[in-house]
Length: 282
Image 1 (tube, rainbow, N blue to C red):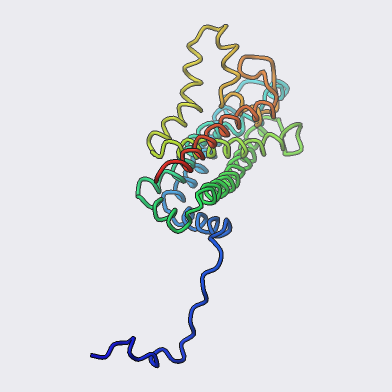
Image 2 (tube, rainbow, N blue to C red; image 1 turned 180 degrees about the horizontal axis):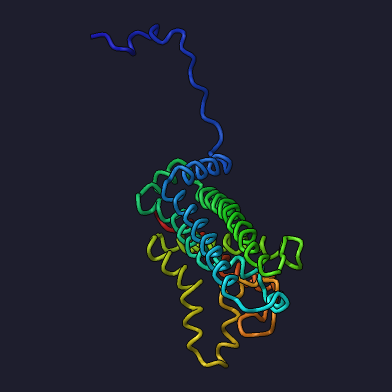
Protein backbone atom coordinates (compact mmCIF):
# COMPACT_ATOMS: atom_id res chain seq x y z
CA UNK A 1 0.00 0.00 0.00
CA UNK A 2 1.34 3.42 -0.90
CA UNK A 3 1.55 6.06 1.80
CA UNK A 4 2.17 9.77 1.82
CA UNK A 5 5.74 9.24 2.89
CA UNK A 6 6.28 7.17 -0.26
CA UNK A 7 5.43 10.15 -2.45
CA UNK A 8 7.46 13.17 -1.44
CA UNK A 9 6.35 14.82 -4.67
CA UNK A 10 3.00 15.38 -2.96
CA UNK A 11 4.68 18.13 -0.95
CA UNK A 12 6.19 19.80 -4.00
CA UNK A 13 5.48 23.52 -4.11
CA UNK A 14 4.63 23.80 -0.40
CA UNK A 15 6.65 26.32 1.59
CA UNK A 16 7.92 24.89 4.88
CA UNK A 17 7.09 26.82 8.06
CA UNK A 18 9.99 28.79 9.51
CA UNK A 19 11.46 27.37 12.68
CA UNK A 20 10.10 28.80 15.96
CA UNK A 21 12.30 31.50 17.36
CA UNK A 22 12.50 33.11 20.76
CA UNK A 23 10.04 32.82 23.61
CA UNK A 24 6.66 34.34 24.29
CA UNK A 25 7.28 37.87 25.55
CA UNK A 26 5.57 40.31 27.88
CA UNK A 27 3.85 42.11 25.02
CA UNK A 28 2.07 38.95 23.98
CA UNK A 29 1.04 38.24 27.57
CA UNK A 30 -0.28 41.77 27.90
CA UNK A 31 -2.32 41.49 24.72
CA UNK A 32 -3.68 38.13 25.85
CA UNK A 33 -4.76 39.44 29.26
CA UNK A 34 -6.41 42.48 27.70
CA UNK A 35 -8.36 40.23 25.33
CA UNK A 36 -9.45 37.94 28.15
CA UNK A 37 -10.55 40.64 30.55
CA UNK A 38 -12.60 42.61 28.02
CA UNK A 39 -14.28 39.55 26.56
CA UNK A 40 -15.65 38.26 29.88
CA UNK A 41 -19.18 39.52 30.51
CA UNK A 42 -18.85 39.39 34.28
CA UNK A 43 -15.97 41.87 34.10
CA UNK A 44 -17.89 44.31 31.92
CA UNK A 45 -20.98 44.13 34.13
CA UNK A 46 -18.91 44.54 37.28
CA UNK A 47 -17.27 47.71 35.99
CA UNK A 48 -20.62 49.05 34.79
CA UNK A 49 -22.06 48.32 38.23
CA UNK A 50 -19.17 50.18 39.86
CA UNK A 51 -19.97 53.31 37.84
CA UNK A 52 -23.73 53.07 38.35
CA UNK A 53 -23.52 52.36 42.09
CA UNK A 54 -20.87 54.94 42.95
CA UNK A 55 -22.21 57.80 40.79
CA UNK A 56 -25.80 56.94 41.68
CA UNK A 57 -25.16 56.96 45.43
CA UNK A 58 -23.21 60.20 45.14
CA UNK A 59 -26.06 61.81 43.20
CA UNK A 60 -28.79 60.65 45.58
CA UNK A 61 -26.75 61.53 48.67
CA UNK A 62 -25.92 65.05 47.54
CA UNK A 63 -29.44 65.71 46.33
CA UNK A 64 -30.88 64.56 49.63
CA UNK A 65 -28.49 66.51 51.83
CA UNK A 66 -28.59 69.68 49.77
CA UNK A 67 -32.38 69.57 49.65
CA UNK A 68 -32.81 69.24 53.41
CA UNK A 69 -29.97 71.31 54.85
CA UNK A 70 -30.71 74.46 56.82
CA UNK A 71 -27.11 75.66 56.79
CA UNK A 72 -26.16 78.89 55.10
CA UNK A 73 -23.73 79.10 52.21
CA UNK A 74 -21.04 80.43 54.56
CA UNK A 75 -21.51 77.45 56.88
CA UNK A 76 -21.50 74.99 54.00
CA UNK A 77 -18.24 76.40 52.65
CA UNK A 78 -16.52 75.36 55.89
CA UNK A 79 -17.40 71.73 55.13
CA UNK A 80 -15.59 69.44 52.73
CA UNK A 81 -18.23 69.46 50.01
CA UNK A 82 -15.70 68.18 47.46
CA UNK A 83 -15.36 64.91 49.34
CA UNK A 84 -19.10 64.97 50.05
CA UNK A 85 -19.82 65.17 46.33
CA UNK A 86 -17.90 61.89 45.82
CA UNK A 87 -19.46 60.06 48.75
CA UNK A 88 -20.42 57.11 46.51
CA UNK A 89 -16.77 56.10 46.31
CA UNK A 90 -17.22 54.39 49.68
CA UNK A 91 -19.60 51.88 48.09
CA UNK A 92 -17.89 51.91 44.70
CA UNK A 93 -14.75 50.55 46.35
CA UNK A 94 -16.62 47.36 47.24
CA UNK A 95 -17.52 46.76 43.59
CA UNK A 96 -13.92 47.43 42.59
CA UNK A 97 -12.89 44.74 45.07
CA UNK A 98 -15.11 42.33 43.14
CA UNK A 99 -13.47 43.38 39.87
CA UNK A 100 -9.95 42.94 41.22
CA UNK A 101 -10.85 39.54 42.64
CA UNK A 102 -12.51 38.22 39.47
CA UNK A 103 -9.59 39.39 37.33
CA UNK A 104 -7.39 36.68 38.84
CA UNK A 105 -9.61 34.12 40.62
CA UNK A 106 -12.01 33.45 37.73
CA UNK A 107 -9.31 31.56 35.84
CA UNK A 108 -8.68 29.33 38.84
CA UNK A 109 -12.40 28.63 39.16
CA UNK A 110 -12.68 27.48 35.53
CA UNK A 111 -9.25 25.83 35.31
CA UNK A 112 -8.24 28.17 32.46
CA UNK A 113 -5.18 29.24 34.42
CA UNK A 114 -3.50 25.98 33.38
CA UNK A 115 -4.11 26.82 29.73
CA UNK A 116 -2.75 30.32 30.23
CA UNK A 117 0.42 29.04 31.85
CA UNK A 118 0.86 26.40 29.17
CA UNK A 119 0.70 29.06 26.48
CA UNK A 120 2.96 31.38 28.49
CA UNK A 121 5.04 29.38 30.98
CA UNK A 122 6.89 32.48 32.16
CA UNK A 123 4.76 33.11 35.22
CA UNK A 124 6.09 36.56 36.01
CA UNK A 125 5.00 37.72 32.56
CA UNK A 126 1.49 36.42 33.18
CA UNK A 127 1.21 37.92 36.66
CA UNK A 128 2.48 41.37 35.73
CA UNK A 129 0.47 41.43 32.51
CA UNK A 130 -2.68 40.80 34.55
CA UNK A 131 -1.59 43.41 37.08
CA UNK A 132 -1.00 46.11 34.45
CA UNK A 133 -4.34 45.48 32.74
CA UNK A 134 -6.23 45.55 36.05
CA UNK A 135 -4.43 48.69 37.22
CA UNK A 136 -5.09 50.62 34.00
CA UNK A 137 -8.74 49.62 33.71
CA UNK A 138 -9.45 50.28 37.39
CA UNK A 139 -7.76 53.69 37.16
CA UNK A 140 -9.80 54.73 34.11
CA UNK A 141 -13.09 53.54 35.62
CA UNK A 142 -12.15 55.10 38.96
CA UNK A 143 -11.52 58.49 37.37
CA UNK A 144 -14.82 58.29 35.46
CA UNK A 145 -16.61 57.65 38.77
CA UNK A 146 -14.72 60.39 40.57
CA UNK A 147 -15.15 63.12 37.97
CA UNK A 148 -18.79 62.25 37.24
CA UNK A 149 -19.67 62.19 40.94
CA UNK A 150 -17.98 65.54 41.54
CA UNK A 151 -19.54 67.32 38.56
CA UNK A 152 -23.03 66.04 39.35
CA UNK A 153 -22.78 66.47 43.11
CA UNK A 154 -21.56 70.06 43.02
CA UNK A 155 -24.61 71.02 40.95
CA UNK A 156 -26.84 70.52 44.01
CA UNK A 157 -24.59 72.63 46.23
CA UNK A 158 -24.48 75.40 43.65
CA UNK A 159 -28.23 75.78 44.19
CA UNK A 160 -27.39 76.50 47.84
CA UNK A 161 -24.94 79.24 46.91
CA UNK A 162 -21.72 77.20 47.11
CA UNK A 163 -20.04 77.13 43.72
CA UNK A 164 -17.31 74.51 43.38
CA UNK A 165 -15.18 73.66 40.37
CA UNK A 166 -12.00 71.77 39.61
CA UNK A 167 -10.11 75.03 40.15
CA UNK A 168 -11.38 75.30 43.74
CA UNK A 169 -8.80 74.79 46.48
CA UNK A 170 -7.68 71.16 46.50
CA UNK A 171 -10.55 70.02 44.27
CA UNK A 172 -8.55 68.70 41.32
CA UNK A 173 -6.20 66.72 43.56
CA UNK A 174 -9.16 65.28 45.47
CA UNK A 175 -11.04 64.26 42.33
CA UNK A 176 -7.98 62.59 40.81
CA UNK A 177 -7.30 61.05 44.21
CA UNK A 178 -10.76 59.50 44.21
CA UNK A 179 -9.88 57.53 41.10
CA UNK A 180 -6.55 56.50 42.58
CA UNK A 181 -8.30 55.30 45.72
CA UNK A 182 -10.62 53.05 43.69
CA UNK A 183 -7.64 51.78 41.71
CA UNK A 184 -5.96 50.83 44.98
CA UNK A 185 -9.03 48.85 46.06
CA UNK A 186 -8.87 46.78 42.87
CA UNK A 187 -5.14 46.16 43.28
CA UNK A 188 -5.59 45.12 46.91
CA UNK A 189 -8.21 42.57 45.86
CA UNK A 190 -6.05 41.40 42.96
CA UNK A 191 -3.16 40.64 45.32
CA UNK A 192 -5.42 38.85 47.79
CA UNK A 193 -7.00 36.88 44.94
CA UNK A 194 -3.63 35.75 43.62
CA UNK A 195 -2.73 34.54 47.11
CA UNK A 196 -6.03 32.85 48.00
CA UNK A 197 -7.13 31.69 44.51
CA UNK A 198 -10.72 31.71 45.71
CA UNK A 199 -13.30 34.29 44.62
CA UNK A 200 -15.59 34.28 47.66
CA UNK A 201 -12.69 34.29 50.11
CA UNK A 202 -10.97 37.14 48.28
CA UNK A 203 -14.08 39.32 48.19
CA UNK A 204 -14.81 38.61 51.84
CA UNK A 205 -11.31 39.54 52.98
CA UNK A 206 -11.20 42.63 50.75
CA UNK A 207 -14.54 43.91 52.03
CA UNK A 208 -13.48 43.16 55.60
CA UNK A 209 -10.28 45.20 55.26
CA UNK A 210 -11.93 48.19 53.59
CA UNK A 211 -15.27 48.26 55.37
CA UNK A 212 -15.93 45.81 58.20
CA UNK A 213 -12.73 46.49 60.19
CA UNK A 214 -13.49 50.21 60.14
CA UNK A 215 -16.88 49.54 61.70
CA UNK A 216 -15.49 47.16 64.32
CA UNK A 217 -12.88 49.68 65.49
CA UNK A 218 -15.67 52.11 66.34
CA UNK A 219 -16.64 49.77 69.18
CA UNK A 220 -13.17 49.93 70.73
CA UNK A 221 -12.30 52.27 73.62
CA UNK A 222 -11.61 55.84 72.50
CA UNK A 223 -7.95 55.60 73.49
CA UNK A 224 -7.53 52.58 71.17
CA UNK A 225 -9.37 54.24 68.33
CA UNK A 226 -6.97 57.17 68.39
CA UNK A 227 -4.04 54.84 67.78
CA UNK A 228 -5.64 52.34 65.39
CA UNK A 229 -8.26 54.16 63.33
CA UNK A 230 -5.90 56.32 61.30
CA UNK A 231 -3.92 53.30 60.08
CA UNK A 232 -6.91 51.42 58.68
CA UNK A 233 -6.76 51.25 54.87
CA UNK A 234 -10.06 53.02 54.18
CA UNK A 235 -9.44 55.82 56.68
CA UNK A 236 -5.88 56.43 55.55
CA UNK A 237 -6.60 56.13 51.84
CA UNK A 238 -9.68 58.36 51.88
CA UNK A 239 -7.50 61.34 52.77
CA UNK A 240 -6.40 61.54 49.15
CA UNK A 241 -9.91 62.53 48.04
CA UNK A 242 -10.47 65.02 50.84
CA UNK A 243 -9.67 68.73 50.84
CA UNK A 244 -9.74 69.24 54.60
CA UNK A 245 -7.41 67.39 56.98
CA UNK A 246 -7.51 67.73 60.75
CA UNK A 247 -5.87 66.03 63.69
CA UNK A 248 -9.08 64.18 64.56
CA UNK A 249 -9.19 60.40 64.95
CA UNK A 250 -8.68 58.70 61.62
CA UNK A 251 -7.59 61.85 59.81
CA UNK A 252 -4.16 62.49 61.28
CA UNK A 253 -2.43 61.93 57.93
CA UNK A 254 -2.29 64.27 54.98
CA UNK A 255 -3.53 63.31 51.54
CA UNK A 256 -0.47 61.57 50.14
CA UNK A 257 0.85 60.19 53.43
CA UNK A 258 -2.51 58.53 54.03
CA UNK A 259 -2.63 57.26 50.47
CA UNK A 260 0.87 55.83 50.89
CA UNK A 261 -0.27 53.80 53.90
CA UNK A 262 -3.30 52.65 51.95
CA UNK A 263 -1.17 51.49 49.03
CA UNK A 264 1.18 49.72 51.44
CA UNK A 265 -1.68 47.32 52.19
CA UNK A 266 -2.06 46.73 48.45
CA UNK A 267 1.70 46.24 48.02
CA UNK A 268 1.81 43.60 50.77
CA UNK A 269 -1.13 41.77 49.19
CA UNK A 270 0.50 41.91 45.75
CA UNK A 271 3.80 40.56 47.05
CA UNK A 272 1.99 37.69 48.76
CA UNK A 273 0.03 37.01 45.59
CA UNK A 274 3.17 37.10 43.47
CA UNK A 275 4.92 34.60 45.72
CA UNK A 276 2.01 32.15 45.60
CA UNK A 277 1.52 32.62 41.86
CA UNK A 278 5.20 31.90 41.19
CA UNK A 279 5.80 29.05 43.62
CA UNK A 280 2.60 27.00 43.71
CA UNK A 281 1.12 24.82 41.00
CA UNK A 282 -1.96 26.03 39.18
